[in-house]
Image 1: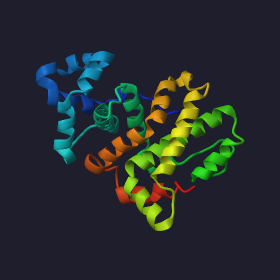
Image 2: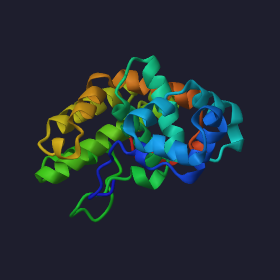
Image 3: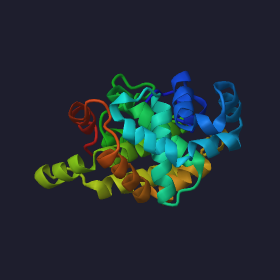
Length: 242
């Protein structure tokens, strides 16, 4: 966790040239040339209609290893598709979760760096303890990080969490759900949440944490693998003990 960065729903404004080329390769016959597509993508309503086109999801799945798209585009289209099936209609919620996946795909980004602490906080119990003495801004960042991290771990690595719980007595999925739900709720109620336009998003994630976790389970099981999955899981899950 970068102590000065707040993850926001901005995947849709970070698409790269290769994303435009991909959309053209799939929908070009309907959308015209690249200049026309770029104009459409700069308009919020038309952009979201384009990104919801099922043909984009099908192309992402069918082309597999031949893909040349940004992580922002890839994760947004996948997350948005499973969220729609779960009746999570708000584009910004899918965008926020897609950005969490894009950020947390790097194991280093899952580490929690707190001002005044010499070393990153590697465990949830350390982060929760830090909340007791944190100033208002740091507490907001901590709650966001705990919520995001809980959703990422339980969404991407559910089987490993179940296995660790059964074999070694580590926390199970219900722990991650409870922790993530409570921290998203507290962050959504924080006075800084409106400044980042996150209040509604965080309340949705709190209220529907299990649903969003299951949506990410679906993506993890069937649609994609984040980097070297075994290595990433080993690195990241060691930070999840209470």
